[in-house]
Length: 482
Ligand code: NAD
Image (tube, rainbow, N blue to C red):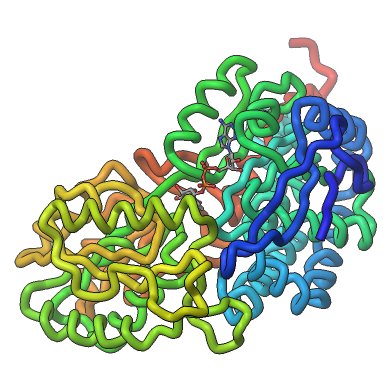
């Protein structure tokens, strides 16, 4: 497979002809040769987006919305191929890419397609003879930089609101998983998006990403990725006073109280950590379980972990595939060593699966380790199928452990006591809280973090606000002298 950059409505080679390879995480074979964007290519893409902005931002909002709705339909019509492409690029099992990711991608485009002509300004009540009104205005060219863990979904999370609001976009997909973003750009062109409104520049962070951050004609950077890179981006964007939206790492706390519905909590916890091999910013990577139910809960959870079907992500029955890159697999493995060195007890997994068929892929078994809340494996984001376990006695202690990291993205709790649910949800330091479920996301609910998990929000009306400025206009409608 070969792919090129998508700039100004067409697929083009990189200016210097550079390419890089992406690998199939199931066996390490070469999957695609991808044109590599560098500074000159990013500059070309920004110029194309700038040219398109005048027309696109002045189009009736309903017309922008209609194109987003058509794109959602095109994604659904192409679901089988898109899901397989995503599975091969990321290692995420086909049953999830087909059953969840592609469907959610279409749903998100559809949500923002519907939103386009409903996101409106306000009229401010003032003295007679004057009209004060506030209009949301598109920012201009927006730079969007995304990671490799849910690449197709992030295309919709970022493009949907930015385009609905009237911006033009230059997106830099991850160098590890650029394929679905390029395919969506192609589908967008097919359904009639004007040239330059969407541009895709796959390349490396230090070159293509940095140029997007530094470019004087880019009004805003919306970044999803690691906390360390997020800090670099905020520093770099300060030079041109760009707006910045940062969706960064997480270390999700998942509290199971003594009165929880245990079978439901076990299923939700397993989904929370092992879905997509734990490569989720909102993964339930820390289980905080009440001592009265700890043994029963862990017995059930460990038994369930043992039944998860790990294997070729293309097989329809596979529940957990490989991690997305060899480098990342090695990083996650190193945390298993760290957890052991820190005195952690491995309750499940802890190594690569033994099956010969998986030997050249980037696989790790679903892993559960009991350790101290201060341990590195319990404080740092691992971003893999590794869940740490802590025990608590009182609600206050549970909250102290849950809020005891620098992150504040997602968190969950399981209880049948309604007042406890509200109280603990309120006290959890997290942008998203799930009660008696985990990691359920929908396009209408704001998504984002606190602390070193970043700032700004995706989804819902909040996302539309992220991609607009508000212009206030005061009109003297009485022609009176003032
Ligand atoms: P990463 O920070 O290494 O890379 C993310 C993107 O930034 C990639 O496209 C990369 O090429 C680019 N990049 C790297 N260095 C750059 C630089 N100096 N300037 C500009 N761009 C640069 O993250 P990753 O390993 O791809 O993804 C995993 C991380 O993403 C985890 O920390 C995870 O928690 C986080 N994440 C957060 C959310 C959220 O919504 N909060 C969602 C998914 C993933």
